[in-house]
Length: 463
Image (tube, rainbow, N blue to C red; front, side, top):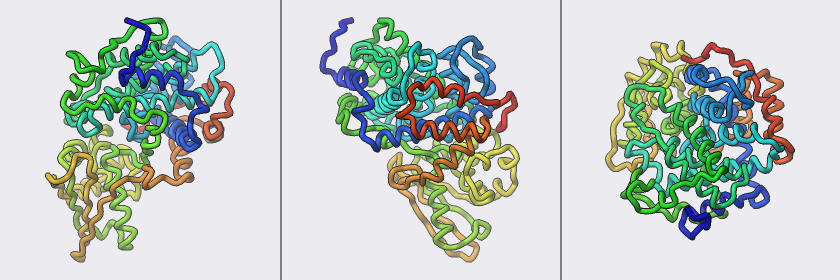
């Protein structure tokens, strides 16, 4: 394959990724990137106490020099990217709105790559690589029809598009030129996978999608760095092409390069305050708002009526409170947990609380219906009917953690410390937080390794 780039959308994207440097990033993009790095690491350090993480650790090798976050163990780069990606996504507390779950895909690949570097990699370089990954992952998803179009066909975009995000991030970090960066991105399409079939039986497969995407993207970039060529026409309208394969009706290849360097895709990524699928967050916010505005207590609720799109019903409509994985996909459980325990955070999902009869009873008082007029990504309408017969309804268009309804800095920091201290001592977690807050001034990111060493142990906290 020719090493000369043409002017196709993927060529423009590859050139942008290969030349992206910290100095080109706006201040608000830098600050948001640091927040998402810290948020992802917090989620992963908590996820090191998950059953999925425990299983993944058991099947990888132990030879290498890349940290398995939250433990004293080391592994090779690809195995570490896989397991750390699983940890980051295990408890559904990692960010969303990118490829979809960009942080859990990009950060494990980047830290695995820099840990094996023979030279010091600065915080500025790491930040630029993370931005490149977020930008690429979201652009791939938008070019493939967008979240609703792509995922409604059964693909889980964290796995299908996230692999390319990880490849781009590592390519930038390793300083690959534009042709090699294109090879990394296009090679990553051969490792692109992930199906929503897990939703029907509570499978843990969703958690592995982030890890496999991180591992596959890292592998693609490593191969490309050694001259392994990717399929140059994979983003054209050809048999076997990415777009024709994943969603041939709605693809817009020009979105791969639209407004490069002007529209930063990490800015649309969102944080998650609740330990559930992002599809449930808006409903929890609506519940919170209604209780606050009416001054009423959840014990006064007679029933809850939910109206939602067909896609959201399929994704989050099940009344689950058994195994951890399907319960975190249940919108009814998130609402019931908030009512019974006062929180929809991670502590609401312990085995003891999932078995609480009050949660089950309240879910039985919920009625869910599909509104055919709703678009796939429309948020649900929540109606609370109280014992005195009064009813109040609300739809929150953008959930907490978004730009429209941001988490406050104190809440972001509190979330990090709550999660990180599940695997790290409090003082160590505080040091990690302060280091990440000043990441652009860190001369060698390999020093992060010591701050990520913990004692998660072999016992899972959540089953």
